[in-house]
Length: 154
Length: 163
Picture 1 (cartoon, rainbow over the protein chains, first blue to last red):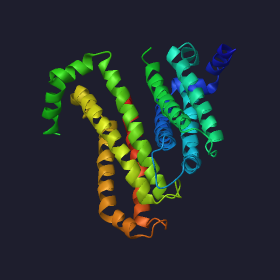
Picture 2: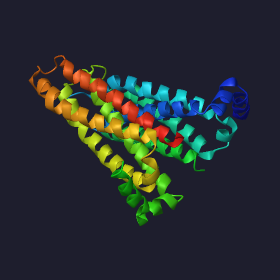
Picture 3: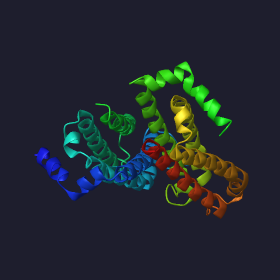
Picture 4: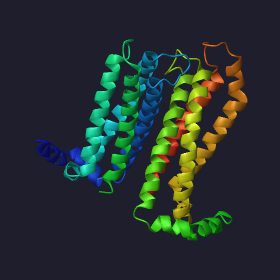
């Protein structure tokens, strides 16, 4: 199913433009890394607060509500630029194990964030859950970064 | 350049820089840590800057946010500096002529000067301002300049491979 999607993408003018241009890939790599930095900063501080680290007298929900937009902006930059970067050779990415692991980890991170979003305003959540969610959020993002770096090596 | 070139060549020729350059594992591993440390550092700087600009964590006093987050930024900086020095040494003889590296280095120096200027001029104003009140304009200007300079650092850092 997905093979057809990647093959169709390879036939688009966007994919051809990324392949031919010297600079499109480079510019979107810069956007990708900037998005990762923004997303990473927000996830780290949110995770730290979820785990009990105090910041400016703000509760978990306040920190989450303020920084989820920053994290979302970073995620949009990472995902949007990522789609363009894949255009350089979509089928190569389709068969790359690191890329598929990265996508799975990213999806897991998004699902974890949705769980946090549902729980963060509740006051009946055991403290240990916050430690687990904080570890999952930051650990998954670190793993996404490592898997991303491994794409070019495998 | 006359002073830098011999130093860069000496670094490039050291045994450890050669070992990093010639290893298929060590260079990518150091580069990976460098990129993640840069993301950690710039990501946390961006949060402090966004707070000063009133775009994030608005319900917390700006100084509290800065006091809590900046130690994490310094940890990221330390990791980035050590890995950056190792990567620089392994390519020193070539990279000092790379225009993207020169832009990256200049932007980092300017970002450092911006931090010094913030502590010298803007932070006293922030300390004197009422808690929870508006952030003084010089601090906001410093935050905007900081965001712009770190974007240049990231962009130029990625561009090094293309020159």
